[in-house]
Image (cartoon, rainbow, N blue to C red):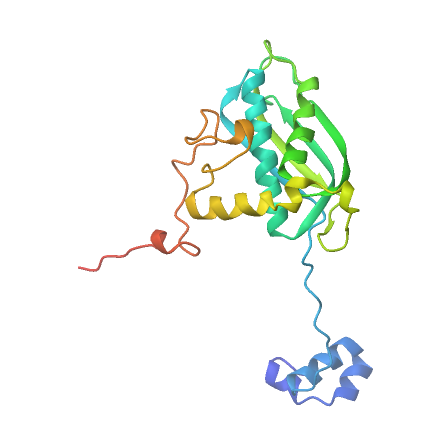
Length: 226
């Protein structure tokens, strides 16, 4: 039809466009002329699963180190869950050895059905620590671990009976942790082994992290013109 620009498409007769092409393209012509014909799609607000996983800067080889790893990761996942206004019904914790290791590959994982939908950091931490029963220490060095939360629902949908709720959830411990960490830093507050003032030896190193010039004012790119 010799239509090669948006302007030419906008002045084309809508009924002819529909006949020769489709109703979808006809709606596009109507939209170009200010007639609402294509409904807006609602953005998906809630996630179907949430994963917090990191590689270690140095291998984790002891039970206490892995306890700290799982505690920190579970509580960070709980904070993210709370920020998203969701609750989880299933937790999966996992860890693994390096694919480049000369030894035997080992990737233990555990799936824990939570007693109820929750974002309680205490409950999630206890569930994640069940992975320790499947982890082999002594001859195995782990280079990565993670926590995955699934079976997610909006927080307002699931309302448990008063006697069956979680006391830490009623007190909004996850929300309190989120507020403190936003103000004082990610390592400023934690439960149990996750409460540390300085980064752990195994924490991922970010010495070579690129500047976040589009999201942080103090990391904007600076240009000097002589």
